[in-house]
Amino acid sequence: MAEKRNNHGYPAGWAQVDPANVDHVLRYAVETFHPRLTLASSFGLEDVVLIHRLIAICPRAPIFALDTGRLPEATYECAERIGRRYDVDIEWYFPLTEDVEQLERTKGLYSFRESVENRKECCGLRKVEPLRRALTGHDAWITGQRRDQSVTRQALAVLERDEAHNGMWKFNPLANWSLDEVWSFVREHKIPYNQLHDQGYPSIGCAPCTRAVQPGEDERAGRWWWESPEHKECGLHR
Image (cartoon, rainbow, N blue to C red):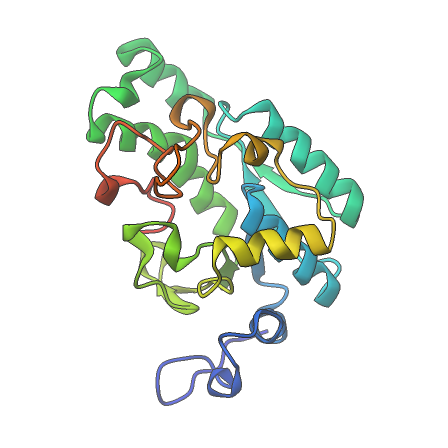
């Protein structure tokens, strides 16, 4: 469906949407952009909540995931359980083999721990470039970002322009939710989830770049724990 704009820069009809109501946001996204709409899933808690709600609105909604080649086994197991529970086909995207081979031959297997620049280079090859391909042909995408996840997301909007991807629209329906609200929804609906969450991992990425958090730490303290909080984005959400 072709995008229609209003005079305020948002797509037509957005002014009538309650951004605090996740179902309203998802239904609007589907009605406005499907089939040129896709949901990004890393199979964290937020993403399985969004899959549960989106599939109820649009059973054949496109869903994609990025296989970086270094994901924890528990993430793959969660993806399989989600696929069976909701009868969905996850479209997987992978890094370009020659790029990963070149990086590891020249800088080794753990160059990402040597500097922020090296870490962003690795994320660029394993995540950012595959994401570009995953979003090709779409006008909007949905993410599970929340404002209280980290200092880098405190100004997150429910609907925003993704300038890093040609100005397409990005929906963040759970932007206003707390972690407790996410857990309550998962438990109430018995949604399959990544078992690492039960081992102290509120945020899960690649296995070498993720650890359990300690009591009182930020949700994303376990991601790239050797870096300062303001650097803890991989480039997917610039």
